[in-house]
Figure (cartoon, rainbow, N blue to C red):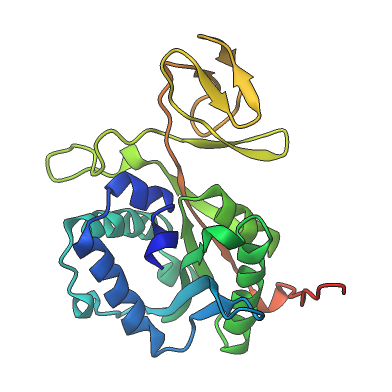
Length: 252
């Protein structure tokens, strides 16, 4: 799992250490007993391909049982708590619990094959079968975000890294930029900072050229001087029983 987690945008920004991974291991282990998490295994080889980690988020969840040791995990939770404060889903829908799709990971060898979308479809099906009214997920990756949108999720809140401050009013993640991904001509494009020039995947951008790209709170980026970072988005399916589930079968 650690190999996959290293590519997660927030984990990259936090520069994970051993304590961070140990806290992640602890969180996953403690949620496994709820039987809402599953993994994808390549049938022919038995290799790990991906995992969909979910848990029953109760109104009275006692987070102290996780006993996180890592300051970096604490920073991650601050962003999730900020989104929860924005949405207040328990109060809005008068719920005692809902399912949280906490993390979807795919091994590098199995990416760009539709696996993350299939895992979201199956997670929604499982949530529906378990009787959940609401499913919630937070995203820092545009790929997981796009997969969730495909199965009927809706965005209800959005924050940037700069929205979360510590007790001294400073950003929890210093140096984080406003958005490093955007949607251009039907493709997710990662915007990268560069020394007076940069590349947007297939698109080569000349020195100091102004790009007319719509994203977040700004309408353009000056290549080479603009600084942007990933939005975290929380989206959800209000009525899970209305979300259709398609079983994907490969043609031989």
